[in-house]
Picture 1: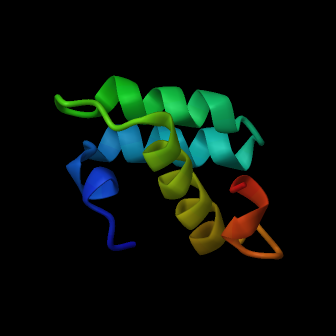
Picture 2: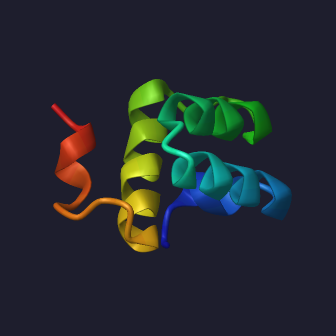
Length: 70
């Protein structure tokens, strides 16, 4: 995954995000991203884009990332 927000996260935070996504807990995954991100914190929309990309990469979104966007 080629996303600067994702790459800025420590490995433990990435693992936690993946665990939350596998459990269907997207809001908690966003919180994990924001909690582990360096300043300035990414906005909710940017976090949701990371979540959508990650879910697609993990095979958790059968129809692609558009399910999480407007």
